[in-house]
Length: 243
Ligand SMILES: [Mg+2]
Image: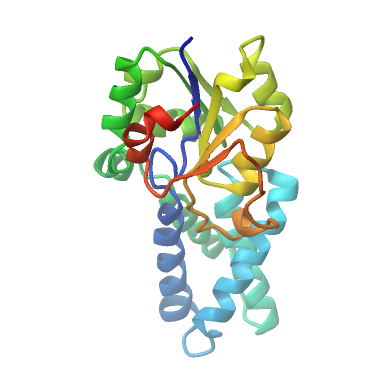
């Protein structure tokens, strides 16, 4: 019987974290050199505060598109208050706009999929394995990303965008398939490995934990269902060991 591969998208099939870094750098530049000079706090202070606020906002706003630019607004407000500097609606609007730089379709198109992804997906299609795409995040943003990188080509209608990826969601997708032949492929222990194991399926873990949110975990679980690869192409190169 053929295998089923449930692929994660962000930082598994396409690099995504540095979309946010790009916006963060612009935010720092704007705040320090355009708005608060010479009273701006140092870069590290601002970025630590922004990351802290954004992490807290995951609790209330989840993985919505609005969360990240809202965190920029809140960071700007908080620093102005600390420094007793006036701010107005225009400043907050600008902070939000800079946050929105993280969602640039042209950039997604230009970057495409990670190295080796196309070759790996083509290979799995050739093997007649079943391919499913499962990504958490904002519906409209994820749709645009997936379109920009033409993922329909491999996944067809089997594309699921969910607000949060948990064991229940995976379980529903797996349905009555034989769980010993279903693999989740993802980059994060917190967002991919944990829910996959809870749902009772196998895991190909390709670490890329560049976001503070993803680094909150207790390390790689010791579990015989887990295989760690450094690059996506290793799925193709080690295909026969996936049993
Ligand atoms: Mg991911």
